[in-house]
Length: 454
Image (tube, rainbow, N blue to C red):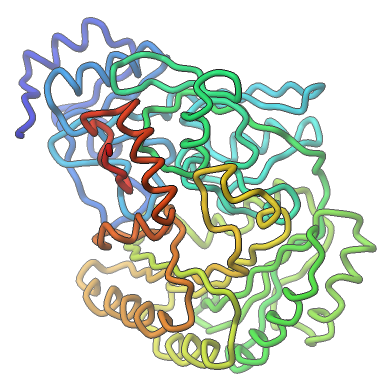
């Protein structure tokens, strides 16, 4: 059904909305409607930049009253562009970014629009952290709700495993508390079930002692990629939980193709050096270094390489092991990559992620050892077809080596709905569908990796 956002209706909303109401006639509209992925070019009828829970409640009620599509924007980083929409309402939480740390209890409460940079700066003042995204400009909301992978996950589990409470504006405009004691089914669904169940205005996390880590990046010529991935396979097999290593292919800023080890050891430096001996023995890198650094420095290490505004097409597949055949497939593909801005990356799982009981959270993918991420990026919109096709072809080529499962936050634009089912499995999808029916029976929150009400 078409949106009914007439100027009169927007004026009516403005009388009870205390945040910023941005519409196509506003000076800030063009900048406000942009998201991280430059491929996404949508024009919402109104962007409601909320400053309070009451603003969020008014925005949700208004969307329901006007039968308008509603998108929820935290950091705007989702590669599929789910933080915005055409002709509907964007509930923008960027005005709700406060982070309050309780160092004694080792917990933190954060507004739904906070980024991981906001969060990590606040918790680092107390020598604490929780598993968060590897790019500091990513919003905490989308990452947490989809599961949340990061450098600390092998030590402390996924981000969603550390979510201990939330405040949620549900489809009826009511504010509900989700915890182990209040609406525990809702908390279970928020731990990996995506943005299907309401607008999370506050997240509460469990924190862990983290300050200095052994981390960084070691870069080698792409000609060594095949042996680098074989080494990575061996290192990952014996890695202690404190060690997380990603391995991938990328280009330097001046266009040189490289293979990289990205490292985090969350423990004493001397122990970390022993754990990294095999990688150190690989030889002197062409560039980069690994050494003691503040955890916040590691969290910002990739920021410059993932700026806002590039054209992005994202694919992802979980794999149980890295075979020689899979290595040959991805290296051969990267040798033919059409854009030097693109990357292929293995993310290491296991450790604490695997020890969380499968039924404890909506997040389901506990057994895979690696996630293979294909990030196709380019600057010129006219080059979209060849870059998207490269990513799709590679995704098809590696399918034989994968588990058939996918991380919900990495589902790209235009992928089939059965990919969402593949993120949860049949039993969890059915349970999530039932919880969706309870809290959002009309599927008001459908501009996401959608789980329809059952």
